[in-house]
Length: 139
Image 1 (cartoon, rainbow, N blue to C red):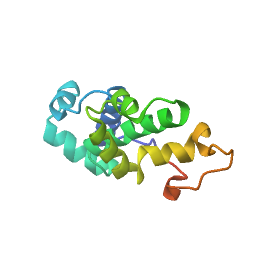
Image 2 (spheres, rainbow, N blue to C red):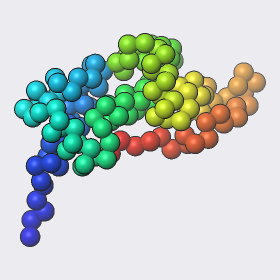
Image 3 (cartoon, rainbow, N blue to C red):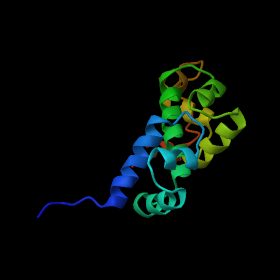
Image 4 (spheres, helix red, strand yellow):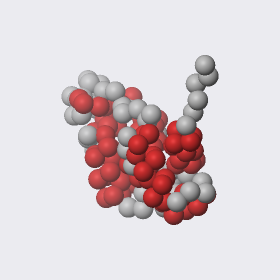
């Protein structure tokens, strides 16, 4: 017996692919539902049922995942990173990052960027955000 993918699962995968391709753009349910040829209400209900979250929350998680990568691998400022991943203001980026990750972007960088892990004396800095040893995966 073949494993059948339901229309709802297919739509959910399409929404995820759309959001991953357009993560730096402003979130618009209308634009996304139009691109996927479904109503906004149907998209919301189906995505929540199969993904267990809303498209906007998933969009935030993708942006935070991209921000985590930049925080670990670059020396860009927090504001520059927020802008690079699509946030219009650094305060909104700070709010969403803390909500999704459980710590500030600065704390995350201190704990995960090799440049920031050691203090000026070469000794390791204390963990400021111990709950973030493992980043939140995007499923």
